[in-house]
Image (cartoon, rainbow, N blue to C red):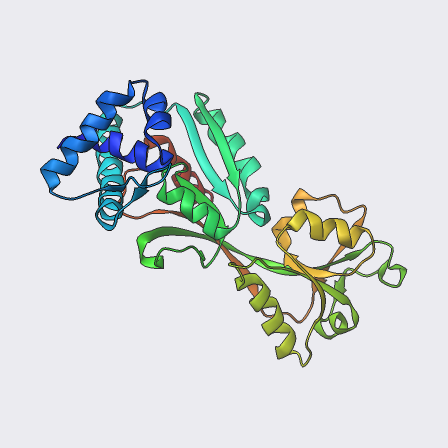
Length: 298
């Protein structure tokens, strides 16, 4: 069995049909069917259940699929690493970021491109689980995220470069006139506000941190909305719906004409931020240098 056959097998497994797989591989259907049959004969195992219209993987097929995906990724990484020995600093750098960290990127990208103008960026946005999946698939090289990184893999499988911590601030509608002349607020004052909180089904760390700090000050926040989008929460605040507590850096991405930011005088919590990438996996030179640019800025 060779890598070519493994690629054939994975394509059929992904498509669930010989006809579509052959079209995707730019080959005729009979030779593809023949290669699958040869693989099954060599392995002495049935890889697909051919009953019905489509193809379903058997238990042996599922196992081979997992192993083949890993082998092909390792092979591709080996090729990239060998080529990278002499690589120049150019090409596309695919990175990921949670929305609350986007504000950390513009200045860093601008400075990086001044030094390496042949590098362009492709940025993906999502929660920790989605960005963790993209790291696993190697569709992105690194992630800028709040810490801890709440992805599916064990934390020890990631390398992390911690960045300076980010203080929390209160964000309220600018129409709340009683706060017009204020620049700061106490935690207990938040108890009277309808509260909006950033939370997804799978990433809850920031939500838990804020709620825990409220409880430390003797109250439960009056949460009227949980939302996975920073932009939506900002729009709701601008509409006078309620208030929230966000890391201060988030505010640099949004106009402060429709919302008002207040420092929290007696808060004792911060948001940790970091650069995350897969440990013990090849990183292109441009990705390594981009990570290094954050170290230099500390």
